[in-house]
Length: 578
Image (cartoon, rainbow, N blue to C red; front, side, top):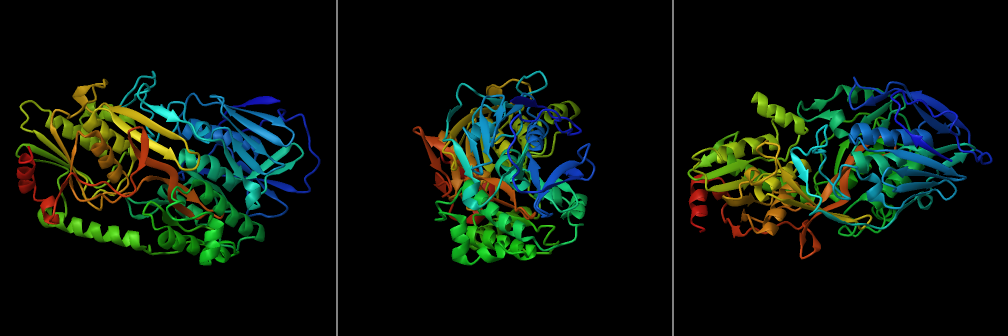
């Protein structure tokens, strides 16, 4: 039997559309409870409370029924990912339930074998507006008429190599999916880990009193330096010991998620996280009933044992209770902190506490920013052009810098992108910068979990004339990029793409590395953290995907750090290179 799942704002259950086959009773008892569900803030909520199910009297381990899961997947893709062409259908065959995408790709839940199988995991999570199988740019880049704006995805030059089918073998971790007659239940956290965090980078937290669609950015405001109103609601619940069932499930689910989605297992010599936790003595606190102790174990493991800069502990769980904490630092963090302090001090010695994001020194323009930031979707920039108030992020900076560099009678012959204090940030902003400098911005990604590989090629509408042409680039200038050991993540990716292009000269010292996209995550009991995910940013050369985690060598080495910020001397040096 097949049916179409459509998002209903009130999340009405699909009565009268149940599978024709019924199983014998599972031996479990299921209690349905409904919860207010907050959508990233205290103002936006689902119109109706969302149903969760609790088996055998265990009230801290929520399950979601399969019909409701289909509704959530549809909602997350159409409302959170803004995919207008997304559709989903479901079919039932005894102990198996299959969801099928509009594209024909599917996932099958086998409740007898406790497994979730995708015929192609990347393709199932793929947004319909993405050009490639793995498209990390979040801005759809299209308007209501389907016309390209801000980002043009070049379908002719983009290409994919599809990966293997993907099986999440829950039985191997002792994780149960339950069929009880005409009802099919899977743990909510399993849905988070397999469907929501990888695709939408956000998931559902449960504190015993309400559901929260939230991650670190919704619980803590880095702009205000304080916890949000939503965090106050989340931590309003009374801390409590974990049930034995939750303690066992939460530990095994954590191992399952990390085994499947952590992108640096090979370089960390991790064959399985369960084995690693046992080797370092973390299996007991992570599988115990004390949520606060388990939170601290996750924190210590990330900061000392993973120590990969992208992985980070963000927030304690509500079950463990709100705790003040200071971030610990492993060797990699200590090293980059030391470099950051040194380079920031050298720049401060020249500019004081604030530095110019755009500066002209003679015939050379310097563009400097320490994070790739993309806070707005495309329409905001075209509106900003009309009102004269450009959005304040990296894209807005590049748009205004381009206007200055290309103005009539401009003296600018050299353009220097200063990433010497740049520790990374949003992929959208990185791709926009690449499009500005290179015209065509190649972006290659490999999924370390499935083996899939994609190269996307983008262009950027930098002058906001709604066309994508040579007027959006500065390719007629001499182009340079200033890098240092601080240049990490996207601050490392951009120099890698620039060097590979042979169109931009790199100055400075070897960049800091960082190749895996950040994967937001949480524990089943509500700890919020992030890991180096399975998507590894790469650069393409001679048809091969190369890891950039070791950093990028400059074309010209700068011996003294103070010379990075002596712009007059650096301009003379650049002019002497040709």
